[in-house]
Length: 209
Image 1 (tube, rainbow, N blue to C red):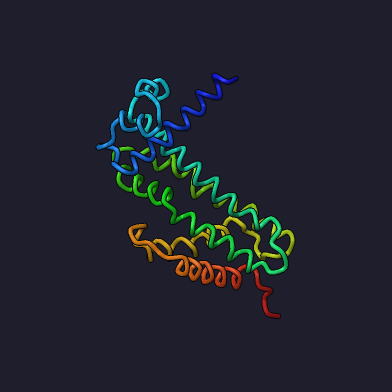
Image 2: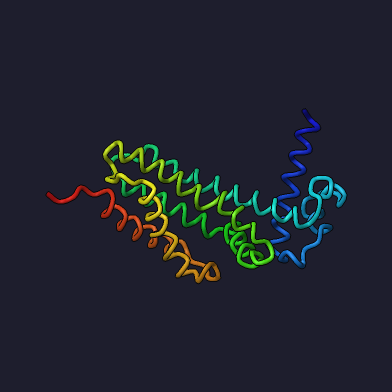
């Protein structure tokens, strides 16, 4: 058991070290020795876990995308019990998602995706499977439960989830110029508030009689 646990820990350290080096240097300029040093392991240990640098790159991207997804799905948790004012909870969730989308790891992941996708076309599918599609499904599940409770008025929670994320991430990408410009917390709060206001009017307010 200890041996298995140690192997898992070393693999995790290698993947985290690899992502750090790839994000800092780019794929072409990164070397396995630097990754081993970052991970705190010997170079042969890296090869014992991964056959080559390309395989390591793909696994590092996948692990980072999964970590990003886990954090974003966790940010949806307040929607399980939103309290009396749904708009307050939605704005809280919106703000958390925006902060996660603009944190260092998320930005590094997008930069690597943009810069290396022509050399590694399959990483687009890797990121998609551990990213936007699954986040949308997780949000749709939350919204479906709210619809059953009469808090959201939709028969298509998938569409509602897509639109909520679109209201958040579309303006964010425009204002950050696809992640090349940083926003302060007040800007993120403004985006969260505007997206929530529009979503609530479309999907959560009772229609006028």
